[in-house]
Structure formats: structure tokens, C-alpha cells
Image (cartoon, rainbow over all chains, first blue to last red; front, side, top):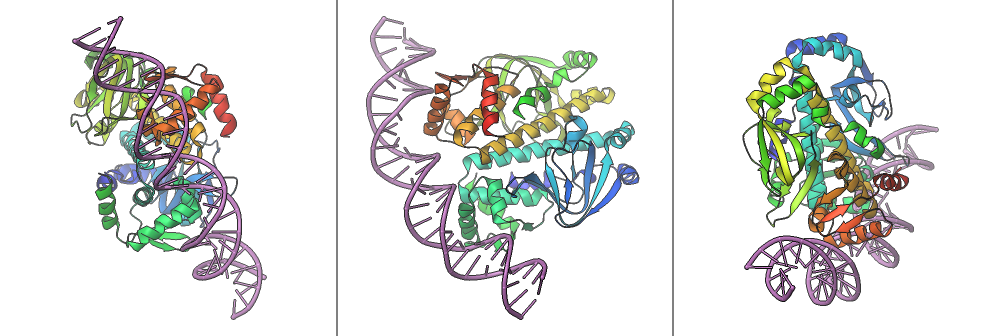
Length: 224
Length: 224
DNA sequence: TAAAGATTGTCCAATATTTTACATTCTGTG
DNA sequence: CACAGAATGTAAAATATTGGACAATCTTTA
């Protein structure tokens, strides 16, 4: 499954027609955010679709102790906030810019107007939502059935892939540990073992996957 | 969140117009399945939308050892198989009838024809997919941050709610344990403690939630 | 550029979970 | 309705994970 992941998780903006892209560009509000800026707050009421244009955003929950529990990372072309449009509920996550970032904000009414004449938007949104469910199911499967080492490896690949094939991942190990449901101690040990096999590189506040394909092969061999 | 869950996870068939319901009824193939029958096999290539009309279906994976790892339970009105329609991929899960069950099968081409004239179908499918993602995120959050006892309680409530408010859940403890990523021993102990507090009832091959509201209150108090 | 603050690596004791094993209870079948 | 097979309850030993602590390393900023 991991091998097909990047193929099925195409960004929203790549799934719509050029005309729809222009239409969105015309009516979206372009916003720029500095590294670490809070783009949306969990609980925000205002419905709207957001689209990453440059940089990367991290989706997760800011806990009271200050840790940030990542759920997904989205790269250029990817959308978020669909839930506010269709469920009428406030934002369910905090969204943080990672590096200098550009995000287009398409307020609810404007999106609803656009989709009247553009069926490809709904089609793309459905695909996006379905693929995301699929990825979440894979994460659940990893958490319930894989040993720590494989679990860490797999979740790293998933996060990197949905972000759009980056090989570098900025996070404190303590945050990543919470994301994986592990203690920092266990995560550190796991990363150390993966690094010893040349599958990841640890840095200060970042993790790199030097050879994605080899890592995927390694995981697939242990998680048939 | 648990308290709003049943409100947001309305079945697909309740979200579309009466006309669309009739249109689906007219072109769907009605199938009946006996208890335990395999409705779909992971890997099935034929695209199509399936809709539960009577009874309950269990979505999961049949492992080689024979255990069935449940992912979701769907009750009357709920749909599944959307992924085969929009991603062009085979069925990702095994689907099993629980009790005497009626399922309508809407082959891919027929669905595509219907949606031409019925925008409410796409709208309902998006909502369904988004709510499902939301539920999966809650499950992930439970798995990574809750102690065993709370985790078991919360996943039970989620499964029962998405099934459409049943209070009875047919499963072997060994299967449920795998679903939760626990050993049967730990699950058994957890269920025992929950039963001692009157929050669940254990039976042979089944679990009951006698007082859903009290259980939700109990969970919410421990998982703010 | 030195010092303060963050983050990471790692050790060890404490705790939690799994594994293994076996007795008990339940269900369906002949 | 007795019996075989299946599922559950539970104890003890083995294993894995966490929590707490501290030194080492890295980054930022004054």
C-alpha cells in the first residue's frame, strides 16, 4: 500500500481543471504566514476552504503543555477545512505554518458559489476526503499491529508522502512521540536503530528520510 | 465530541432527497445475506456503491489466522465502497454480514449515471467521507493518548454509534482485542473493570452497552 | 561569542502489557 | 441432552514501555 500512496494522494489543485484553478485564484484571499504562525485555531467558527500554495502546513492539536500533536502535513496544492464547509462545525484542528508559507483562503459562500458551475470541485473534494480516510486507516492499522520500530518508520513515510514527497520533517522528537503514542524515550531508541540501518537521519528538531524507496522496501518486507 | 457523534454521523440515505432514494431503489440490485456471509472481499475489482438496508455489516480485515479486525460497523442507510468509485482501486476491506442482512448494490456505471442529475448524492457522499475521517481521527487520538480502560470504552462507543445506535455488539473478545491493538488478556481485564462499574455487559460473543449516556459521561469526564 | 535555553541520548528503576497456561463457562450439534 | 469445540476469566512469569534523571549537544540571542 505504501508504494501506491503517493500515486493516489494527489493534491486537490492537481485534480481540478485549469479553469477551476483560475476561478479559485480569482476569488481566494491570499495570505502569507511566517514560520510557526498559527493559520487556524481549533474552534474557529468561520467556514472556508484553505489551500496551501507554498510551503508546508502542519495539522494537529496544541496541547496545554505546549506539545503539538501532528495529524497530517500538507504541501502545495493540498486543501484543508472541508469539514467546516459541509458539516457546519468549527475547525477541528490547529494549523501551523512550517517555514514561509502561502495559503489561499476561500470563504464558505464563495466556495459554494463556485461549485454551482464547477462539478470537478466536488469530485476532487470527494477524492481528497476518501484518500485521507484511507491514509488514516493505514495509520490505525500501523498503530495496532506493528512493533514500535516498524510503526515509527511507517508513520514517517505516511506523513512525508501526504506532505508531497518532502524528505525532511521538522519536529521535535517529543512531539513526534506523542503523535505516535509513544514516550520520547522509546521514540529516540527507535530512531536510533533506524539510523543505524541508514534508514533515517536524526537532526536537531528534524528528521530526514535519505532514501525513501529503501525505507518503503524495508517496511513492506516486515509488514506484508 | 462523543456527544455530538451521533448527530453528525447520519446515514447516507437520510441525507439525500426522497426522489434520489427512489432513484437508487429503482436501479440498485437488492441482495440478501445470511449471518456471517462475506459480502465483499478485499481485492474485489468491481466498482460500486453498497448501501445497507437491513441489519448490520462489519467492515474489517480477515487475517490469515482467522481473526477479523473490525474497522467500522455500518447499520441501515449507511453506504460503503465509495473508494472503488472515485479512486479506481479495488475494495480495501472485507465486508461481513452480521445477522440476516439486506444490502443494495449500485454498480459503478449506474451510480455515475444517477449523479448526473442528482447533486445531492455527491453532497451526501462528501459529508459521509468527511465524517468518517473525523471518526477515524478520534480513534487515532484514543489509541495514542488514552489509557487502556478509557480507550476500550471510547472505541466501543464509536463503533456502536457509527453502526446506528445499537447497544449490542457481536464480536469475540479476541477479535476486538486485535481491533484495539491489545492482547486478549488486557481487553478481558478492561472489560471486567468496566462491567464492575456497570458500564458494559459481557456475554459470550457479544458485548452490550446498557447505558450509553452514562458511558459517554464517564469517558468525557476522563478525556476532556 | 558566551551564556541561556532547547533538544536529544541514554541509563535504571518502576510500571504496564504480553505470553503462556489452564480452568471454567457457554453454544451448537449429533 | 451429553459432548466437543469455542470463547472467556485469570494467574504467574517474561518482556516491553514508561518516567525520571542527567549529561551532552545544538540553537538562539543578548
